[in-house]
Image (cartoon, rainbow, N blue to C red; front, side, top):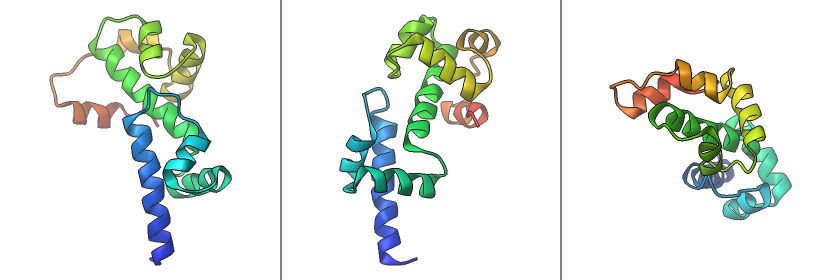
Length: 129
């Protein structure tokens, strides 16, 4: 692997780590490109080539994963959970959740059972595709 590819991967990982850590904050491609020290267009192309999905889709999936945990483990309303994980609109949250998980947040909550196993195993077993 060339030095340039290594450096590019490091920059993309830095941006992905920012998304993992700050998923609930408003993050857009220009802000993430600044974290990676590249132009927005280059960032979007390189992120997709590196991780196999667009930055926007990765961030949505990350937010939905957190929402899945909150739906399983808390009794909070779907609207509260949607806002906590970074969605401004409950409708957008529900539509995105259904696209990624395959069922609505309410249906997921009814079917999901809080398991007495470490969270890392639960996340791996329930990770959306």
